[in-house]
Length: 453
Image (cartoon, rainbow, N blue to C red; front, side, top):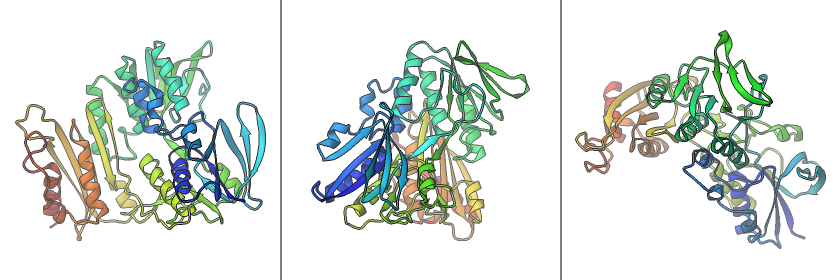
């Protein structure tokens, strides 16, 4: 009899693990069952705002593989099936068929825990009104796209993180009057330093997006069961026929907690470098798990598809009988709002302070190309370097087209534990349509080195 692997969660981490395990173990050696509570598996959640905004016209373009394609690999996928109970001692899971409302118990030999993360929904009055949405799954994207195409006029995005900004751009692109509300002094307060976040906030306002900072939502008010207004303290209110709650995500760990799978200091599932939990035969990967930050050397829980797919791959290789380890993360990320590109890697000032690292910060203004090139765009680049050693600790970029992907050079340097005096000597490509003769990355590194001398 073959062993049975049950995969709980069918997106990036879960399906990467299933695919890698299958490549190493045939179906007569390992049966693979996947249970996913949404209607889709193996999809690009990062592409959802661009479907809502109409940049992507077919939702199917966001699917990497369909259940039928996985079936051809002898991987059985059950969508609209939620694992509601997990008993590691008995080696069993309870699965609810969400359409039929029936429960079935399945035994397993190995289990892949890849539940991902869930959107945070605050306990405010009116959150259940029609027109109030989160954006987490393709089902969410379909529902939000329908509202936009049916003629939404006024939207309020609650939250100034990546999802909030990307959804705001999508709605703005469709001509919907859009306002972003954030409780902090600027957008992206968890991923950028305040000075860089303020720059993004100001640029968004210049694009015609309304951004209100330092404000919290008190309640959502409706008419005939549909949202109509967002009420804030002090009598402040905003008209809205669409409200998107983009207040971040939390690791989906309730099932793990109930099953006795230990969590780590971040509140996500604790795993070792092979993606094994502390329960024999159970592996975990993706947004629901911790990872080691390569700079701070602390456990972190970062929700990025790049991390999830890599962790899932490592888990699947190990489940398949080979050996692989996950080397950690930097939290490298990039997004855009209209023509403004925003990117970061490594530690912010707040994170460096929390890690007990003494640092100095350097910020430079430059252009994405030679200054005389017709398409030159302004950009600001900030780097953090460790006092004394000059070791690069983190970087942030805000600028026009061509600015953001420079973060990859800095991420590579950070991954390699480079000092800023080493970084400033890199032999980077130059031609006027692509960069100034001194690339902004090299200028920032040189300035950081001079500051730290």
